Image (cartoon, rainbow, N blue to C red; front, side):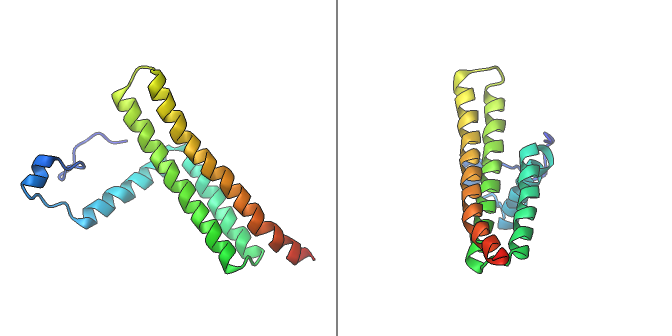
Length: 140
């Protein structure tokens, strides 16, 4: 992750808000996109999530999954990837404020990772509900 300063600060302060400093919507979206790309670039699990997402969408096409199933799969993909970004953010902030080992830092990181795990496990359950009937119909 880059630590160099950009022309526009990432974090708005109360002082900059009071001064009426502009922080455009386009800049906000650019920062958000950068966060997603940085997570993809540096986090192994996000790369795994992306690979599984491609396979999940391809499987939905091959099995002729109904529209509701595709929507369920895509929502699960989005939730897991969003939580992976949140997990990455929590880990970064915890590392910043607590460079030494601390029980509370461990709890925060484990809880954030646990949220991603719960979403991933529930996504597997949704996949079973979506893909198994489609597979049985195709075979049957």
